[in-house]
Length: 92
Image 1 (spheres, rainbow, N blue to C red):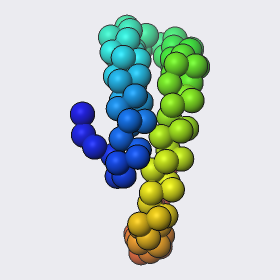
Image 2 (image 1 turned 90 degrees about the vertical axis):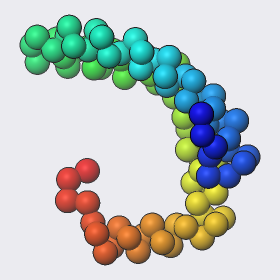
Image 3 (image 1 turned 90 degrees about the horizontal axis):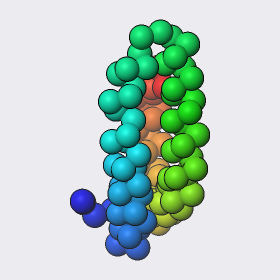
Image 4 (image 1 turned 45 degrees about the vertical axis):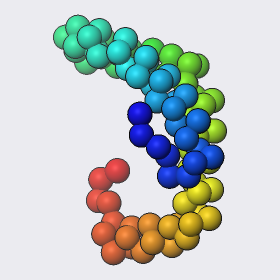
């Protein structure tokens, strides 16, 4: 697995990557089976989102906070804002 933006964030990134990869492996195959109807797909997606939040949500928030702090500490927040102003996303 790759390094994070800042060395202090790397352990959190590795923990999150591991959690996400484990969760995602269990998501893909059943997602294809659940795609037979929009209701089944919506119910499956909701269930998997809740599972993700339960298993990986806390570490994701910690990692995201660390990266956001690193972005700001390195002055990249200003560059990101400039890029967003110059090339705004039309559809999120």
